[in-house]
Length: 254
Ligand code: G
Ligand code: G
Ligand code: MN
Ligand code: NA
Image 1 (cartoon, rainbow, N blue to C red):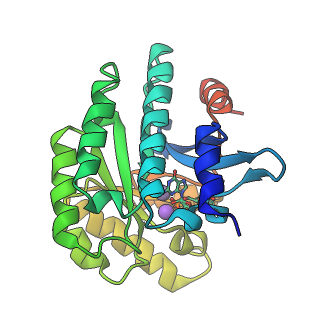
Image 2 (image 1 turned 30 degrees about the vertical axis):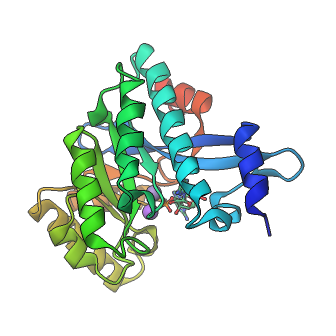
């Protein structure tokens, strides 16, 4: 079990990196954005996935520093891409904690001010629908404040929580991300297809963008496109990859 102190040290040592997974718009047939997914380049253990280390800092002050690092790193990357005319939207994952703490707004405002060339509208903050938001009022307040800066908010893992429909109705979000557990199996299981179809319908009815995760095959792409899903993300488009590889892939998809 990895300890918190090791993560603090690794953050200082610059051992964390963001990978980026494309999001494909099937109407214009283009990748319009990416989700940033953190990895730990551990000096002896190799590349570690977030579920191997993020649980160790859940709920701690360090988690807030981690979120701030993710935000800053993503903005730096957007600046680099934008200077090469790669105008991708970037979605980052935030801990539930950040979205209920008023000081995240200051962190965001300062980070955006430090990167004036990045349009806030190209930044999207993903918040977990499942673990989310014990304090709905606080979360709503922070989300509204963040949106007032022009950034977007996405409800991640939609459909897996206890209050999906209430969140969809009440939270100020721009994007709904259908959890991959429904998408992966939707071509084999009629009930999963029904859920995916219904979430797409509901999201569109609420004037929100809807993103499918876990898009693993061409059959998924075809079916989700027919159902009116706005954006597709998954191994069937591309795996998460380092920034350089993403840029190469974006310029010449294989
Ligand atoms: O990249 P991977 O599929 O292994 O991600 C696993 C989980 O870790 C995902 O559910 C994702 O939401 C979460 N995650 C990935 N990157 C980050 C991050 O930078 N911050 C937070 N808080 N969660 C992340
Ligand atoms: O934020 P979230 O927990 O949804 O993070 C997405 C996670 O899902 C990442 O860890 C990513 O590696 C993983 N993932 C992305 N695309 C696919 C896919 O098509 N199939 C599966 N099984 N996992 C995926
Ligand atoms: Mn996510
Ligand atoms: Na998700």
